[in-house]
Image 1 (cartoon, rainbow, N blue to C red):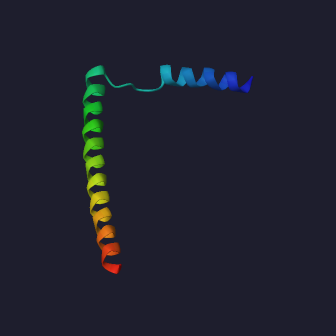
Image 2: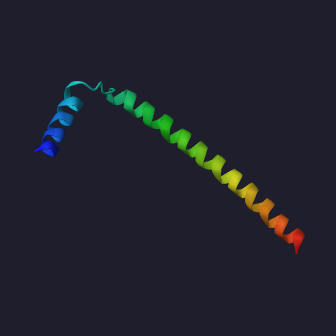
Length: 63
């Protein structure tokens, strides 16, 4: 019965005590998250590309 009680209390907590953003605010936040994710992915891709080229150059020089 504890797991059922846990789900009941979780549902009540989400329904009554959580402050949900408005639909417009949620959309704005989603755009912010999407833009940040794209920028972060491009930064990781750039660092990965630079390190890949440096490692390739290193191994070409030691052969």
